[in-house]
Length: 318
Length: 304
Image (tube, rainbow over all chains, first blue to last red; front, top):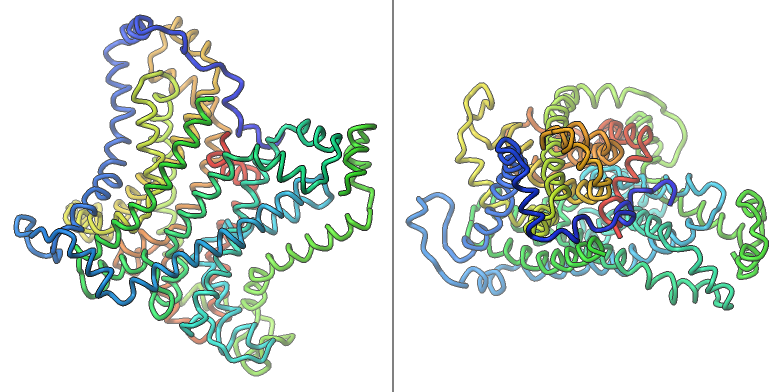
């Protein structure tokens, strides 16, 4: 707790103005001068306009455009609505789509089944007061500081066919980034390398917040350490678990930088995010079609964002 | 640690120092495991540094698993051919204003959310927080169009558009990152004692003074943590710069690497020197402000 005092900052204070009646609130509002009200409005309005204009309106526009055949060139009034044709095209006549979905799911599975439990395991180990804990922690979350694009380059030094370390050591001749049957695994290893440190950090913070008396009680009752963890500590970490789940889903959905620096998401590295980008900035600007792909991403992510918000808002209110 | 040690802690409560020194076989195993994991984790970075310090001719002749050929030439060459000076400057032009603006705007919203208990607060908080979690690619198509439509005067952008200008990148980074900061700062501000505001009101302090002179100074720890985190995030940002920039000279350093790979293509020693150069600013920030960095990362996610 001591070095992470902010995590539970909120707890100490009773819910503000919970007892204030509507009358009281109105009175407080009246206490505000005109300037104050203008200032408050501006303080909210300016950032709100920015976020609405650059994030939410484009998101809505993406959904709308996904129902059109717009090529991105003609005037807006010449747009024809084509219903769900873009979606059926995406699924039926766009070869990279199915592999992309598979890769995204694979990515999610790798992060969720391998990287996340490993990160949690390391956090549990490091949560014990052991010597050198700081060194271990630093080594593990160092990759989190690097950009994913940079990580792509760093791992190339291991993966490259002619100059890479792996082939030099094992005498193999695999083009880890280029061979379409292995490259998705290669980039997932690099991605997991970063993810483990991040997850470890989240759980470490969560574990520090767990009431020590819980564990001691479990120990007194004779529960083994793993039993105590799964039966006592893990359930207490529920909010963190949900957050980690959401972060992992969103990270694997948003995965982009790594495959883009390797080969722009082609030849074995198709991801939905890369397909959207190819359809817009690439040679063919198929706006409606790309928007349908983007809408799929949007819908999936909104489901998990809602779960996330519900979790954190509930935590806040408590 | 065995159950015995745990029980012992509950009985006699030996101090942490003493417990750390007890090297049971289990504990040695634990250390052994952690050392191996830590070294595996550090290895790719260490290998990049090592490769960057060796001459291409030597490693080409003797292979990478060899010893010798030490040189600093790769850094000199990488810096020159890749024009890193300019690209670092571009990163500064984008990152510094974007971080300052993000913190300022986010703290304004957070202040209003924390200071007043209105019904719309929760909606407002949701609008900002969720925006930060949307996949960037899902917004790309309309944004791309928008950026190519919005004109800027020539003195602001030589493309005369929001597209391919520093302004565009600053704005989109701010819009995207605001959510996380609003979320963290509003939680932090809610924990400040309300008496402060009552007192400030009695003294006749305006809302602006309550924000700027009462709240903000108290938020320094949170602001420092967020600033550290946002600097690394915006500096590392790759996607927006890749799709919303066109002129190679204006790319920030993180996304410029991709364009530069062509020049380095067959020379991994140069690639690694370039990678190390790009990583240095974030590594320096990380080692100098490690506490802030870690705190920032856990601030938002593990609120609870």
